[in-house]
Image (cartoon, rainbow over all chains, first blue to last red):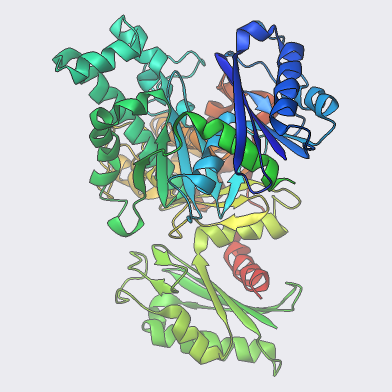
Amino acid sequence: MIAGIDLGGTQVRVAVAAGDGRMIGTAKARTPELGGPAGMVAWARENAERLAAGARIEAVGIGVPGPSDPRSGVLVNPPNLVGWPPGVPLRAMLEEAFGAPVHLENDANLAALAEFKRGAGRGLHNLAYVTWSTGIGAGLILDGRLYSGAHGSAGEVGHMVLDPGGPECFCGQRGCTEAYASGNSIARGAGRPAREVFAAAQAGDPEAAAIVEHAARMVGLALLNLANLVDPEMIILGGGITESWSLVEGWLSEPLLSSPFVTPNRRPRIVRAELGADVGLVGAVEWAIENR
Amino acid sequence: MIAGIDLGGTQVRVAVAAGDGRMIGTAKARTPELGGPAGMVAWARENAERLAAGARIEAVGIGVPGPSDPRSGVLVNPPNLVGWPPGVPLRAMLEEAFGAPVHLENDANLAALAEFKRGAGRGLHNLAYVTWSTGIGAGLILDGRLYSGAHGSAGEVGHMVLDPGGPECFCGQRGCTEAYASGNSIARGAGRPAREVFAAAQAGDPEAAAIVEHAARMVGLALLNLANLVDPEMIILGGGITESWSLVEGWLSEPLLSSPFVTPNRRPRIVRAELGADVGLVGAVEWAIENR
């Protein structure tokens, strides 16, 4: 058996799967209610063992919100895990609890792996998965393997500078993709939650539609730069904002479709993710299998 | 024996090397004087056989100016090879002439491989080589291997958009790195050759110095985006403009050094290439060895 854990700021999920990745069962809890790292680890072990029903868990994969250090298995200081101390040695804690090797990775990277193995990118060799939600991040599959960079931080498409004179980003740079288009930035600019802005745009409100268009165009510009640098076959979009796919798809694709530089024969397809809410769990299980 | 060919618009060079990459001898000619593809192929074979002095040439590597299709071995329509027809099947032509397998790649990719195997990037696993000259391009070594993308066009850092409202690029996009900082753009903006602008800046001309500063800062911004997307250990700068290294180094490095987002523990070093004019030949030989 393989266990996969998808750790987010709001909820945490655990899955047990067979050695070929077939899911046996899943459980979930609200992260803040588990009371920090030790409580989360105990909960994950308890539920994984229950789901495994006596079978041995041979490997564990876990996706965590960034920033983290996959090589050391330590969470640096993820802003989404409210109340968690900095520098949690999560891999070591899980290895002790499970008595099995644990493979930790950034959640966007594991989402990319999931869509590559089981989703929209099956059978391809080079793809980028971009998550567009509260924040914006990406995972890269290059030459058939997850590429995480020299320090585990490849794919920071949210902090690509799209205009050095652009608006300030919370990260301190100017003109980042996130400064234009993250759920947080959209909400701040509009004075109401991003969800409401998208609902209003859907209902025909021209002001909301203009906000959505601008944000999607800026994400599309980031995709153009990503395509020019990484040359993927496909760019897969996931994350909460892609629930409004019909609203954003056209603007998202426009910079790549209209670029005279990226000729059609090397233009990546832009598609929506297939795995939905399970993407993190599938990625965690596949990552454990990949490293077994 | 291994043969390497470095094909440029101005000159073409051929080398013969031992199986471990040690150079035996080289020859060069002016590309336009060889009268097109067939003449170039005949010249390369003749000189490689002369340098090999009777030993068998087992494999050939060749670096070509883009755009090209490394998978098919066909030159698409490289603007630098003046007078060559579009769609030259160069790999097939060389394989017939040499009676040996031929491995064709983009010249910036092979320069990256050369610096990785024999230059500034020895012993690393993840690096980018950026050539700053008449144009701007890059090659990527990721997880210890040349990464060329799904269509052989990864590393197009010269056409990364740094400001969607920026100046028009010859490629048709706006605000590309090349539109600010290629040798061609610098010359067009200054009304004199880039070489003269750099010489004047070196001599203390404040107007020329401002042009150089702006160009180098924009290249530096492209390096910041490259670092955020690819997370390399090192970015190696080569190409003609890096002959003015002391003039550009500070501005080039500034966006990465001053980014609050790229923390020092994951900041790539920015260094100058080590192999100079031989980089293309070394890369071609190493590419043949890599694919042997």
